[in-house]
Image (cartoon, rainbow, N blue to C red; front, side):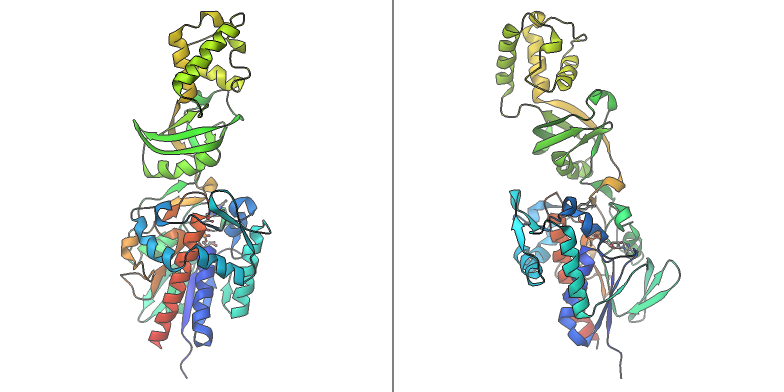
Length: 416
Ligand SMILES: Cc1cc2nc3c(=O)[nH]c(=O)nc-3n(C[C@H](O)[C@H](O)[C@H](O)COP(=O)(O)OP(=O)(O)OC[C@H]3O[C@@H](n4cnc5c(N)ncnc54)[C@H](O)[C@@H]3O)c2cc1C
């Protein structure tokens, strides 16, 4: 009697786990599914998501929320297994969910471990095999089979393979970029990979004295005079540059363009003219004091001092009464738009997502199967598709994983 066909899923992260589940649900007892994971446990990254709460999807998901060389590639999968499918899928295995600001969805328990636990329970119920501590080094097609070899030389065989290894972001959670090598060995092109959803570095002298200060305001990202993106929220000055939700969000754009600048707006609700008028009035009110006191009650004093310096006031002993209109306009300009050049990012270890990756034109968007090798699939972050903060990256992992799992299962049955 012929053995049942086997699907191997390389990578036990979000996309790999759902791929394994949807494949096995389709196959039932007509085929086997094995998930191969290099870490000692599956789903480590899931535990770290959403600050430990797992923002597992977003009600506002659409293809416009995604980036990459061809984000339209994601449309089919996002339509086929969209937000409501994700909510149903998790609802049926035990997750009661809640929606928060900007359409972000979390498990009601506020625990990312809940998401991993329900996935594990379902994997167990279905009889999906999990092999941990097996780091896949190479995958080769030998006749109609795939030979999957670990860094220790162990070999596994399967009839189809889904590569769900993630990208390079946060390698301590498992994704170390080996998936790119595996797919390029089959002839797939890999576009340049850059960390995204990450803190940004600026020239240290531009932010001298500001380390540890937080403010809530407007943040733009610009390339020369073109504004490429805009966010609002809390920004933190660090010793190397900038952090905080708006910075993470805009880092996605800086990953796509060289030589961007961040423009901070400390008073977004006022126009530059209104800020100037305010400063003029302050000059009259505080004319008996020096610059040491000018910003008290208006801005963080240290931010004010940096702005004064940028506006050309070298000493805090400068008398407020001596502020002329030209200087006041300069101060207003810096309050509304302090421009900081981005000179880098805070590295892969601190990044949440990978910009770039395996080029999607080598894959069929309706199945996630390689156009070069039948039976080979890729899903999730290993592909050149990524989103901003808000649950979009996990939605992509679920959508692409579910689609590939079912497609690969169908192929296995064709082979029988
Ligand atoms: C700190 C943090 C917080 C985040 N928060 C959110 C959030 O709240 N919402 C959101 O939508 N997104 C979030 N993301 C992004 C999201 O987690 C990822 O985009 C998503 O997990 C990608 O899923 P994946 O399955 O493609 O890859 P991964 O989750 O990276 O999984 C890949 C798996 O493959 C394994 N693997 C890799 N190479 C091999 C190999 N050679 N052999 C065997 N196994 C291998 C890895 O160990 C890993 O388990 C966050 C990311 C981080 C780092």
